[in-house]
Length: 149
Length: 149
Length: 149
Length: 149
Image 1 (tube, rainbow over the protein chains, first blue to last red):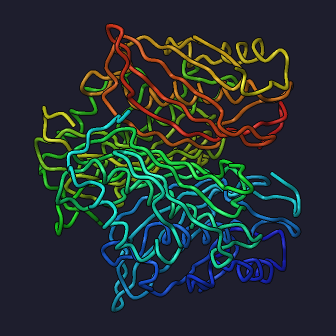
Image 2 (image 1 turned 90 degrees about the vertical axis):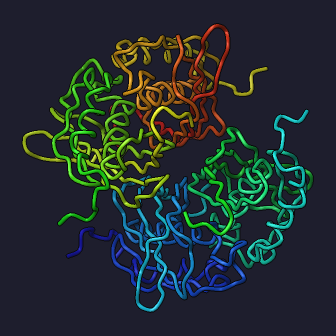
C-alpha cells in the first residue's frame, strides 16, 4: 500500500548513504529499521551517556532521532540531486524516555517541491511493551545540492 | 538589573547540581557560562561526533543545548524541592550550525507556579563573530520531587 | 471503540455548554458535529467575512477552529468542575483553505491530570471531496474553576 | 535605525494594500498602527463577538492578529510581485486576553529569498498598562504571484 511514489528510483540507496554520512547518528547508535517511500523507522538503544538528571534519555536526543526520521522520510520523496534541510520542528514530550530501546517513526503528511511536512512519534520499548514518549511535526526543505538557502 | 526574584536563595547551587547530573551535557561538552535568575548561557565546542551529513552540528544536538538552557533558566526561579520537566518546545533552524563554539542563551518570559515559558537562541561563534543559528520557545513544568506527572 | 473513559459522566452536557458560551464560535458559525470521549469534530461554513487576501479562509480562523476542537476534546476527559485553558499550539498550513465547508477534527493523544496533549486536523470540503489544509498539536491545561493560573 | 533594507521601495503601499484586501482583518477590526521594514504593529479593539467562555478574546483570534503581523512584517522585505503564504506558526498563550485593546507586534528575525522567520508578541492594553498575553514564532514563504505552492 505505497501511499507515495518516489521521484528517485534509487531513493533507498541515496537515503541510506545520506544517513550514513551523519556522524551524529553513529555516535548516538541510531540505525534505520525500515525505509519506504515517505516513511522511515529508526531504532536507538538506551545509553546512559545521553541521559538527563533522572537517568532518562535527554529530550534533545529524542528530538535528534525524531528530526532525523522526519528528514529521511522527506528525503525518500525528493528528486535525485537534492540536499535536505530542516526548517523547523515542534516536539511534545509525553512520558519519560526510559527503556532499553527507542523507535522513531516518521511519515510524510504533505510532500512538496520545496517544503515537505512530516509527523513523527518516538516510542520507548521495554519487555515488548511500547510507550509513546514524544511527538514531532517538522518542516523540511529540498535544496539543490551545493546551493545556499 | 535582576528582572526576576528567585524563590530559592540557593538557586545557583541547585541549578548547577542538576545540570551536573545530566550525563548528556557532559557527553556533548556543554557547560554553564552564565547563570542568573531566569537567565542562563551555555557553551559547547564543535565536535564532529555530533555532525550531520554536511559536517555541521546536527539540529537535534543544537536542540539539546537550547532545551537545556530553557530548563536551567526556568529552574532558577522554582522553589526548593522541585524537579523540572520539559513539556514541549519549538525550534526554528535559521543558519547552518558551523563554527568552533556554540552559545545557547535562554531567558524566562513567563514564570509560573506550574508552567514556565522560556525563549532561547543558539549562536555559532567563529573568529569572534556570532551568527544566530536557531531559536526555541519552550514550556517547562515544575514537579514536586519524586512525584509522577 | 471508546479509547478513553470519561471521568465526568455528564461530559457531553458540560462540553456542549462550554462550547455554547464561546461567542467566538457563534460568530464564526462553528458547530459541534461529533462528540466522543477524547474526540471531537467541529464544522464551519465558508464566509468571506473571514478571508485573507486571496479569498481563502484566514489561517488564524482555521487555527481558532483547530484550537477549539482540541480544547473540547481535552475537556471531555476532565473531571467535573474544571475550567480549561490552552497553553500552546503549533499549526502547519498545508493547502489553501478554500471550500464550502471546513471540518476540524481533534483527538487526545495523552490525557493528564494537569496537562492534556491533542492533535487536530482541518479539512476543506467541496463537492464531497476532502483536502487536508492544516494540522495542530496543542497542549491544554485543566484548572479548578474560578482559580487563576 | 533601520535594521533591514527593503527590496521594494513601494513596500508600504504594497503591504498596506495587501492588508486591506484581507476581509478577516476588517471583520476583526484590526488596523496597522506602525509599519517599518521588517517590523509591524497591529491594533485591535476588544469585541465580545470574538470571546471564549470566560469573556476573554479567543486564542484563535489572538493568533489571527499575530499571524497577520508576522505576514506583513515578512512582506515588507520581499521583492515586488510576490505573494506571501504562512507555512507554520507556534503560539504560547501566557495570560488571559482581557483588555480594551490588543497590540500585535512582529519583527523579522531571519529574512530569506524563499522563507522568512518572524517573531511576534500580543499585548493587552487596559488603562495604559500593557500585559504580554501571547507569543508567536512563524515561518512565511514568498511566492511568485499566481503560482501554486
